[in-house]
Length: 309
Length: 79
Length: 237
Image 1 (cartoon, each protein chain N blue to C red):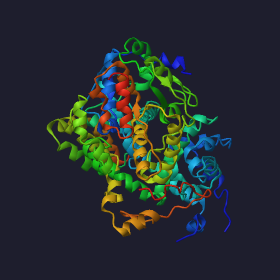
Image 2 (image 1 turned 90 degrees about the vertical axis):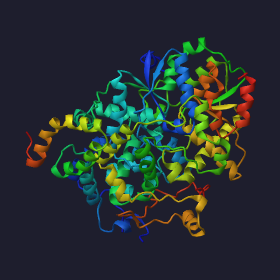
Image 3 (image 1 turned 45 degrees about the horizontal axis):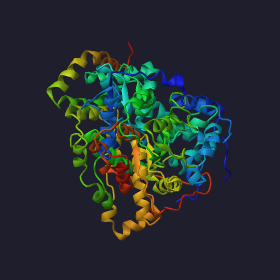
Image 4 (image 1 turned 135 degrees about the vertical axis):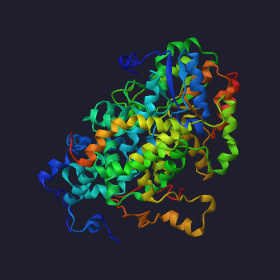
């Protein structure tokens, strides 16, 4: 059950700083294009910038960048939004947790913030800590009434399973809009779009990427993801909807890897919540960029025909 | 090669390991700017300065802010 | 020799508590209830991974066992433990800090070296940590050219990041010591499954520990908390 007191704290901004995800930009551009387009349809103007970089979460939790290196990177990215006096929307659970955690830390530690600002000043920038970071899924939930008014392609008869991922609900124990053990906001959005929610037993399991385990501890990562995918396969949805590009990448690609190693036939299409909303709101098919998806392509085409896209 | 972590560490106690860790974290999170640290930062700043006209301008406008820090680093005294 | 539960003095512990943003203070609140381990995805796959035991060691003083363990590097960072913990202990943060401490002792560099390439090649050169490079031939065949897909979606063929931005993040990396850290590890040398030789293949399966990563002497990590699992996909690369 969404925490309504948290939901109303999310603004309905006129403009918002659009923070792009590394995985979305270079592997699943449909996420970026649909998120942009959907926000516009819902009356929020996304603002881009060529000066934003990766949030720095990956290199930090990979222990390649110490916190002393990644805090200035976070400050720098957020200062871009602050320059334009805007809040920030992110597409990824990891970005959300990372920018929020380090941002809050700097806001509560004046000495650290001053030290980071010294580096910012060298570049002619300043970090104030005033830009709030929102996840696109919580933004969509906040705008659900506008979504309801703008549905152009009802997803009637489409069976959809959800995967919330770990970092937004887990890391946001007190700040996310829903409970970590039994969240329902994506299900509500699916209802609004006319789709049918399909439950499955492993629905609150981690996707298995494990931040760096997919590279360093691949055996653990694959075993965990396989368990998740087995459970999803049993429920046989048309889509598995996720809210994080990293989960998206893992759940999409590991299916092909497992198929290659003859460990089963996994053909579930995985799409991001931004693409789902975009699909429902009627964005042009090219923006969905389903060509970048690896698993379940035939089923994706099938679904597109069924809803008339 | 040792069979287990106790053999690997031998006579060392966790306190000794802890002291090393403590020293490491104190250095990592220290906000002090001793001379050595400041010197290490120089090449990075020079590289940035050489990048383009506007990076030079930005770094130069920062110089006045840097003076007291350099003074503190060189003399070792806090103002 | 006997394993000591606690081989440090009480006044050392007082100095130890406030390190790294005082996370040990939080660890003291642990009830040892085990909710964290019960829902942990890593523990579900490999029984020797046990957050409850690791916190116990941290508070009791058996830091040797945590820092030399292989388990410390098996955390998935899902924050599930934090979300179910009745005392709000942020365990992933502990793992993050303890990994830094373990690296200081010489453990874990092999893992970090594999990840260093993303920082050196992608983040510091293009500002984006994930590149369009694909290693899997089946994937390349299925998606073709990502630039075309981006253009069809109405985006520029490549995500643009200004030169000035690259200069800025490089300065941040230089000033904060990240660049010199990466140099210590000795740059990137990622092996490619496509160009694998039989010798490399054999080593890959048994994961032998290099005794040095760049200029750093590394140590073998032990499974200190039980029998490891997760061997089903052990030959995965």
